[in-house]
Length: 168
Image (cartoon, rainbow, N blue to C red; front, side, top):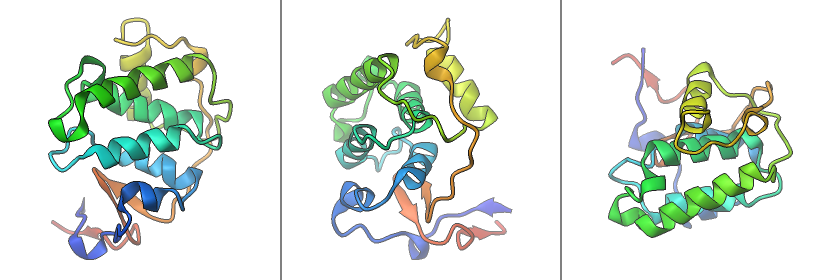
């Protein structure tokens, strides 16, 4: 079984991704961080602004912030490698600002956990040999599962997490 996200299951974003995300909560924000693909050719400044808005909310979980930062480093944002639609200078500023915030322990809530792959990504990006060392305290996350109302894949949310599954 392969996950296939179809236009039929895509959530309408009349006010853009950020306008939609503002009406969600920590579980959905964490789902966005889990599924975001900053390297996707369809990624625009709206995706970056959404990530920035989420990480400025006092309810933003530390695991969510770590995932957004890891995805940004994975995409090369720390080196200014964002596609033009993402505004590379904004991507660099987002990455460095978020790294400073995590290092300064501005995300005290660590409820959600990370998968093994996400933990490996965070360790690669932020461990002793990573491009941004954040310290071991910053890498501590919770163990709670999150239960988002929608799925998020690459650049957008999708309705009914099971509706997008079909045999490929």
